Length: 185
Image (cartoon, rainbow, N blue to C red; front, side, top):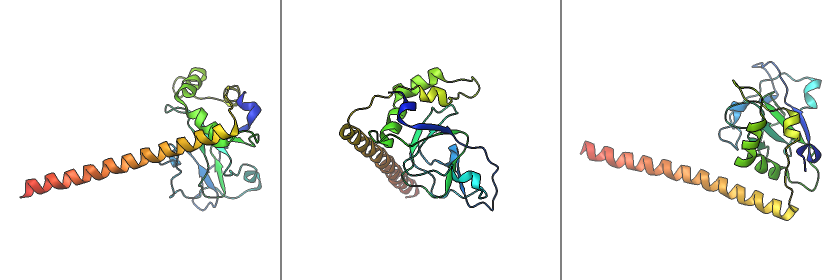
């Protein structure tokens, strides 16, 4: 199925930041890794009635539409409200009931899908995709049970990567302390 048949696709918005703002404005730099929004993000937009229709929900997916690091998709499981996506993102919402939003994000993040999107991207200085390019993306849709299993396995893989990184950091710290003690004795 084409992505545009599964979900609605809209562009993020372009707004001017204000330190007195109470609305969170999600930018590409607000992710601490490919999957987590920085918990220290600060609100930076002033409230207005035009922003309300752009408020993100936990079922939304944001897809980075510009940049050299790929067109990474993020599901918004844990985020602060109210939040809107900046214009560097495409927002996928109102996904049909037979598809899990996290599955769509997983599928978009596959290396083969990223390669396909890079092939269709526009611009040489800063590669970019638009709604049409994203909407024409073919996504294979298995049963809901298989989608749930894929998402669960992907979550476990992310946890494993995070724990491996933490373990490596602890080993490095321990080794540095041992070697430093050898030098000082």
